Image (cartoon, rainbow, N blue to C red; front, side, top):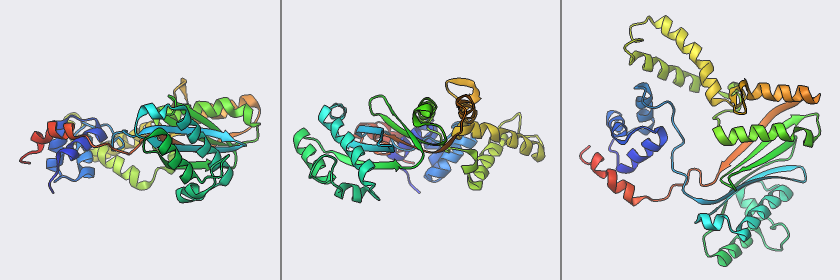
Length: 306
C-alpha cells in the first residue's frame, strides 16, 4: 500500500519519531499506520502513540457548574483573536447554560433548543455571532453531568476544559479543592483510562506483545528464556497502569502518592466519602487538522519513489 507525505507527517505527530524513521516504518509495513506505530514501538523508537492530528482549530473549551449541573462545551472559531473576544466568550457561556437547562440529547437537539436568555435557537444565535464577528463559528460538542457533585476547571483561558464528577456524602463546597486537583491532573496528563479496571484484555495483550518485541530487539534481553521475559512483562504492567490510568497515576502535586490515594486521604480528612465517578476533557481543536501545504512540500522528497 502506497503512502504519502501527509502519512509521514501524521505518523511523526502520533509518535514523536523523526521523519526518516517514520518513512522507514511505513515502508516496512506497506503504509499501514497502525502497524507502523507498532513497528516503531517494537524498535524502541516510540514510547507510546499520541493522538493523531495537530490541534489547529481555535475557539474555546469551557466548563462550569450551573445550578448544580456540570457542563463542558467546545465552540470553535477561525482565529485565536476571536476566541478571546468578549462577545464570543459570552456566547460560549450561553451555550453551556443552555446545555445545563435544556438537557439536550445530542448536538442536533442542542442547536434546536432555545438559547439561554433569548428567543433564538442556539443555531440562530450562532448564525448571528457569525454575522457580528465575521468568522465561521461552530458549536462542536458538549457533555453534562446532572447527578453527583461536579467540579469544573478551565485551563489557559479556554485551551482545555475539564469536568470531574464525584460521588460524595459531603457538601459540594467541601470537595471543591479535591475535585479541582483531579481536574488539573486530567488537564495536564490526559490519561487514556480513569482506572485500571477499564483497560481491556485486548489493550493488555497488545502492550504485552510490544514489550516482548522490545526485549527481542534488545541484545541484553534477547537471549533470556521466554518464561523470564514473561515475568518481566508482568512486572512492567504496573508501570503501564501508572502512566495511563488516572487513579493509579502519580499525583502531580505530591509524587509520593497516587490520585486514588489522594482522594481517599482527602475524604478521610473531611470525615466523609469521595469517589471518582467520571470526567470529560475537551481540548479546543482536538482532532481538527488544518491544511499545511508547506510541510507536505518539505517532506514530499522523502516519500518520492517509495
